[in-house]
View (spheres, rainbow, N blue to C red):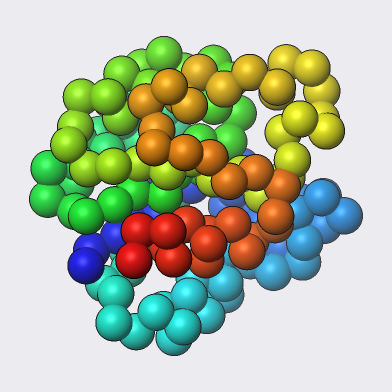
Length: 137
């Protein structure tokens, strides 16, 4: 099984940015842990702060991978284009958020990408990625 984790804008700052919300572990450190835990899965990771690059990556793997875990960051609430990219490929996508988007500012309560995803995990910290992988297994 091939699974791609895609993180959007500002998630490259995990471990440094607002540790009270996002924790003190970098995603690269956590990804190594995930690879050890799920050694039977071919896990890949991609991060970009650029909307078009995220769309290009979804297009690139969206017909050949078994699953995508997507944390679109702030684009969750603004990007019709990312939602359309998810809808346009055959690989199922699960939406993941580290923080509980419903406990944050009002504008974060609406996800534009949810309608194109198989589901959403929100507010369980980095554990949400592990749970997402388990869902697809």
